[in-house]
Length: 503
Ligand SMILES: [Zn+2]
Image (cartoon, rainbow, N blue to C red; front, side, top):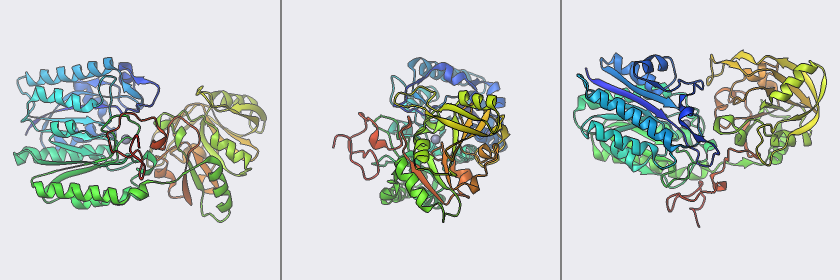
């Protein structure tokens, strides 16, 4: 039995986003536990699909003793403020020093990290934090960290940690499982007695988020190659798709591998790197302009078996969008795409007006663009109120199963034959119940536009005839080549088949 200290700290930094993550952002309970510390951390994490929860349960089942430090996460945003970074780092270090000075100091350490955290004063949030941790625990202590699939892995992170273990799914349905795998790796490090050999490769091009989905090619077969390559002398390996909205030198996909045979470890890292490089062209998926997507879908919808789905990726509330842009809606209305449905549009004002008017009424409304982003205007017209709902329902899809949704007053509106699901709270459209709540069966819709990038694929792939990624104006830029990067490392291509910065 070994005493293992456990802590966690997550932030996914989009350096192009407008708002930084303050200390307060880590203390908010946003559907996940708020900042928790000491014994309270164990209760707070219980039952969550989080790596730390999976690690703790597995380590206890293996007969180890767990000592909680601190766990926190903030919603993806611009860089973590210097104040927040230094305060949280100091708290974690203080807790770790406290344990080290106790009667039964930890003999191993597990950290549940994201891997794409940038602070105002630091490019490599995790690398710096891990260096500070190493100074407290010493080089000999086994240290395992789990990472999000979107981690931008740096040499410092690889150097400080004995084994990095990342998610293998996007949408991330295996967070807990990743913690369980990390506990397995920790257990074998504790019994193996010697530090593992490591391999680390950085891929020379950024992969847009929409083409990182592990449910479809080209990523699906890369992850199959990963699963087949492990075992024998390779203890664990990870493929990290990287978070492409981060303007730092180490932005981008990477591969790590660990084991007790340097040749086997390097060999697998090379094979996985080649697997990604060979698929470069397939990672360069098509982004449709709104008009192009509507014309394409209208020409095919009569014969389509199931809806042609549009991913309104640049207004995805899961990546900084506000679910209130109208670029796709405007194109559907102009092209008279009768029977098309779009959701979930966030507009509390229009939902309230629809409720005041009642089902069957017609209201003149200016829908969308309520978050005040520059360059966006609402779509004004006469909307018929087809159906009303209180926004209270239970999600049933794989991503949100069991979540009790509270989206406030909801309305199904009809503008010239195009129907819009409107809610009062912003919510990524990743569950069919969001439509069924207002009487719309997604499988029966010919053209279905969803405010989501990738997560919707979990619940909607089974009915989709085809999925188009649509690049309507919005804050969450999908094509990395359109971002104003300045600081990427030399030679890194800003998209698959793209050019390096400055060329
Ligand atoms: Zn992620």
